[in-house]
Image (cartoon, rainbow, N blue to C red; front, side, top):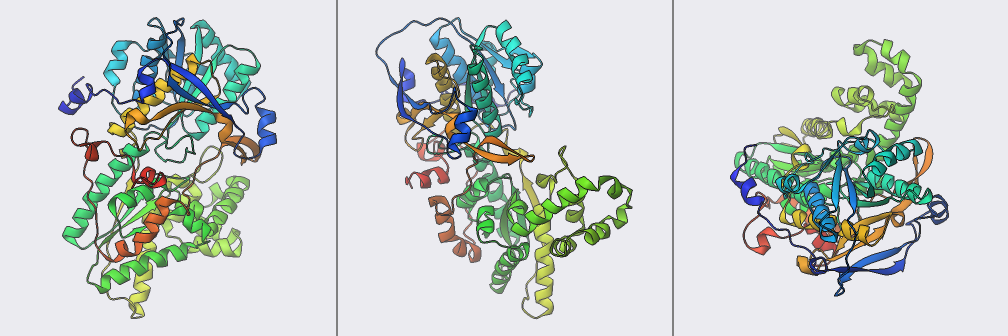
Length: 549
């Protein structure tokens, strides 16, 4: 395989780790825990793994010999920078337990466990992937581990390979599955520990013990570099408004962090839209007013950041989508018989008055996406809606109305962008390389300590790495009951942007200034070598949350 100069150099990087992980460690139990909500229901569903204590690892002067341990690892869900370093840290950790320990990777996600597809991960394979982006060492998949039949099928190969612990690297859904699997194996005395690791670039898997999900740091830096490039072009040509959609269906953490890094003229935060009960019209007016005010200064250009999941946070759009889901599920056969050219009017005639009027106001292309692009459950695939195009077209229409009324005299031309996959497999930043390696190594310590149903945790990460705190938290601590496909199920509670939190407050205090001035920040590419203040900085979000700015 041909390698770039950066790849060759990057392979030699030695991740920084918490001081405790450099020596022998001992597990120190802290406070016993309870779920974030619905305690009685969660406790009844997880009697063997509920209420366990938080664990912290400390230096241990006592040297203990331990038998070798075979461990399995799964990459689950969408890619995030640093996943390979989690596996590398896990590998090095179990080899430290005993040099004869072995690591097996299940191919293409949880499906590899169910279908018994795996490969042993040896030192030469691990060394090839250290500090690299992507999940291509073993691949990832979106199969869910939900049913006893799957658990039993997986247990067959675990027993065959004499695997005593399984590490699942994934987001909130994947770690919920890990929690269910840990409970099942504990209840059936299967003899297999299950440990989770927090992964998602969206940043919505976090709490007091999980400061951030891995990949968020790198993805935001990749997006911010490109946003900065666009803003430099924007300020050079001074003739376009750039509408930029960013990853983040369930929360706006990426859009907010990128705004803090780049200072765009507008950034929509979905959680604020929902909290203020804004309509789509309100959002359009908000953007259009900024365009008009800048035009008065002769600035017919600017940037708008848009979270991917915005439409689901607009209460009126949420109601429209819900009615469309129900209607099309019940009338799919009839709808398919309607001519394509008549489908829009057909839908308009069938919806309630409020939703009919809203649907009729949408651009043709977006309206069609709401009815044609559906997931296997029959629901609208909101991530496929071109929200950036929707907002740009509706802002253009609003400005044209204002121009006819003599309220606006500027020029408006829009360019649309969506940054998603560009950030998921980037080579990890120093922060993510260090953090991920530490998470993987910590997972090996949880295995050595006999823990199951835990998520690897590394805290205090705004400090130098040797002061980071390694440990684990029971996954049940993060659970609540939510309705999924019509049934209440235990799931990890997503962490949304807190409107009373320091990151949003920092943004809110500056956005009016950023709207009218051209205070663009150009962060440039991720820096791997050089001064600490350039190379080893965590996200602005994390520093603000820990009052380190």
